[in-house]
Image 1 (spheres, one colour):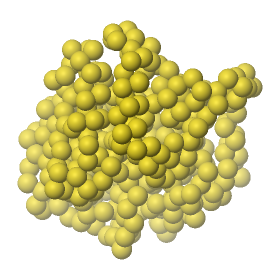
Image 2 (image 1 turned 90 degrees about the vertical axis):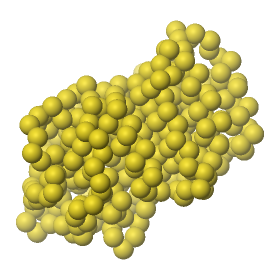
Image 3 (image 1 turned 60 degrees about the horizontal axis):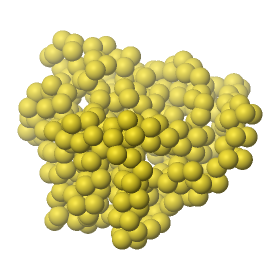
Image 4 (image 1 turned 180 degrees about the vertical axis):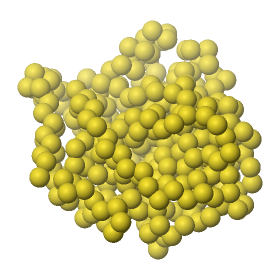
Length: 378
């Protein structure tokens, strides 16, 4: 069996342990009033664009250190396998597997436009913590509709499993893995590598969008990887809620002795790249237009780019990625990725989750796959 070990240098690991006392900020870690006060404190740490960019570097470093990805692991071969292509009305869908590092096998799907020649935008679509009879995750009907519609608009869309979902769950992996945040953030970075390898994808027109836990993956990836050119975290960005799962807040990325931050400020690291927050009145994003966006807009104002920072608040909507939220993101991506106007969502085939699995009898998991729930030494 192929073994893969990632080792952080002694100097980096020792410095992190000795110089920074980390605190886990999880779930509703602070009150709404405390969040407002924290944003004010953070706002007093910088004035100019140069000040902000210095702070942004510290936040990125803290995210990577806290998630045990500093230094970044080597980019090993992805060993991507794409199969079972189905041609549908205006798009195609295929099953894909890839290895963010050797033996860690991730399943997903690639949606492509039909009837177009090259010059495609690329959209990454991480999913959230939804389970159900439809298989949950990337198999949800609302997810399949979103991916197919974006493909019809002219984007190549890549969606993949969180640890313990879909092909990962079928392989015995559990979402409660202690390294869930590390594994998922590194997988997001490697998913972007895979997307950029697809024929016709324009590296200057790359976006990421997801809701709930997929929203967390969206703003974390956007914060640490500037290859993402437009970002649309949905129903997630909050200054008082830090994510309720260890894949979002199970490692010390938010608070150390030297730096405090929250998810609103992490989302602001998108600046000056286009950003849209889609929020609702049903969850922790209920204050988004007045609290989180107020801070984020000051960051974009430092670049003179308030024009590419948008907020869509749906006070009567629920915590989901439903039709009205999809419509907002379609419009935003059409504008900033030079996509076609969004078509009607009718005519999209909703496939059973078994049809979308990357691993099956005809395409088995590779023999060198890591055993389920193996612990990686970073």
